[in-house]
Image 1 (cartoon, rainbow, N blue to C red):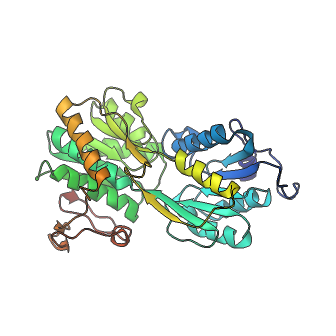
Image 2: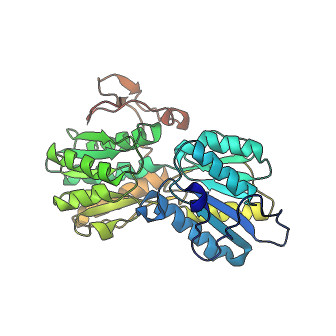
Image 3: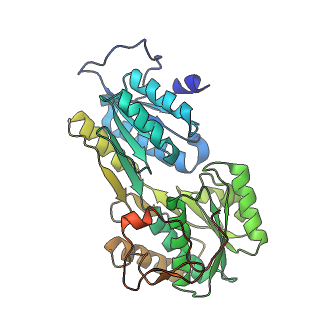
Length: 360
């Protein structure tokens, strides 16, 4: 099935579907072949969809100077390494692996193909030909929390989580901190579905949170299912990765929007110019990799507060994770006036006061 998926191509500039072993080395005159592997389908209208928007933007930018191939529905396991090797063996000189669980398989493939450049989204391990890139998703969660703190009548929000890795925990905590910045008594419940993309579980989790009294929802999962479930109950919610307002035009408040295209274009250009280097990129509002979709279905003053909060984070005025910060037990985790550094954020496995429930 994976081999059949490998031959599926999309859009202008897609690579020819030639199986590994049947294609020779590319000459200097040939287009640069760029591969993408995706955890979900391009039609998830969330995480994978937004990555593919970035791929399509690169095709439009470079025209016939590049050829791209994408492989969708690649599980986070040994099969991903097979796909990575297939792409490398068929002449792809730059490969973007777009899910956290691909990390070790990317490193394994990179060792076998030292002449291929690999880019891993949301990872933290690098090598000479492996780079990492990520977005500070937690910044948008804080903005969402501020808005939720203003709008929630119950003072209780719900969070549909995927897997309790630090990236997800950062988002839960940032949302809670944002909510309590305007409502010190606000609370949050969450449900982990132990998957990045599982629409039925996502929708069921959203319904369970609403049944527990949550009157505003957000999510760190890949489909519009939580937003749709909330809309079906008349509950306002936030979208994820891309503007999902078409699925809930009367109830989506905003959405965290990932902006991958400029990064993809820049890194492809660096390979073409022989200037690619292994880097570790983690950008947010200020770096242009994160945006909020339009603030809707809320009073003008709340929308204005949302925009002001984005501006403060973008300028560095609001660093979000600044002490005093206490965990659920009341123990001080970050002293007053101290800002958490990236190392601490990337090891975050505790929950701030106001969040109800345990990570495991």
